[in-house]
Length: 426
Image (cartoon, rainbow, N blue to C red; front, side, top):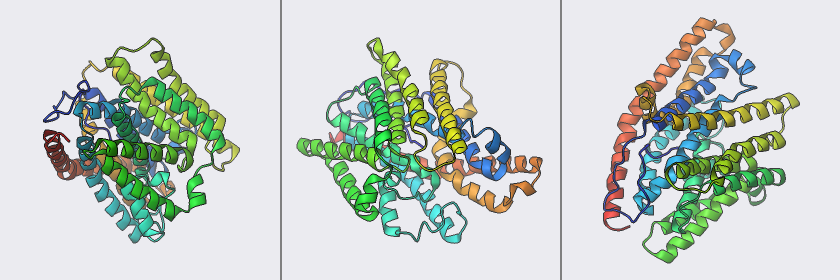
């Protein structure tokens, strides 16, 4: 799941402040995040509990892809302007670290334990196959761009979130703070071209996975250390390193292939473009440029397909389900924006607050449910619906606990350290 900063209305960009102001919350974004989290849980439960829907609806609409694309639009809408509002690269990365890593570490430890115990059957042998390479790749959160399987399957989206953070940071350091419609459309168009020319996992194939992971780990740590330093020249060099690294990995080494990686990036910058259009003066062409992004994204899916071996029927299903998910995510986001002044369901808003915990923890709970239910064909439909309700209840309870005891304390620590850095002018 893409992890956006809490949905506050960002202030206009400016110099670093002694403390980053807490802006009013935007409930509509929380509600969209809550909706996206529920849809992803539903998608992942289909094989175990509702195979009827998997067989009839999934070939036409990918619920999971819809949910993560909606998350990506939300991240694009709030992340760049959050950095601009704070005005401090160091503060941004401190808050990002404490927002993402603590709960991620909890999920990773549980996922590894499940793999060792044989519970997490989706990833057999994950912990035994190059464990140190896997550990380093996961610590960078770029494992999906390094051809390393995620120890918890949903971690893959965090790789694209991290690549987005690297690019947004580089743009901020170089003064390109108005990236929006043109950037988004350019990435979508590049995806269409690169997808036809570049095979997935090209770098790992020629460099070797372990070597590439080592190089990327050093580059990421060194680049981030440089961009948060007080040395202007070091910041510029670090920004160049992380920008080039992100673009190269997205284009030449992602698991899903170049076109999907760059379309994901285009989607996030599409969210940024919508924010710019809403809050800043923009030329008339901005609207149609934004509208073209999902059009080009669908064209890439239709023309290029999944990029790996499938039967003709499965490939057609992929094209349909991916395309409708793209359209659905964009329409949902625009509808949420249009209705933002309406009263928003407090349940969805609360689910938005705990959505990161929902997203990271639900695959682990689902694996337990899989072990308990085994063959869904042996359970009646009412019985499986009862299991579905129990799954959602367990996920929500665990998410509430994760948010209360892991996320919130970590976020408070992050804000305190970030504000301290801002007071020091860093």
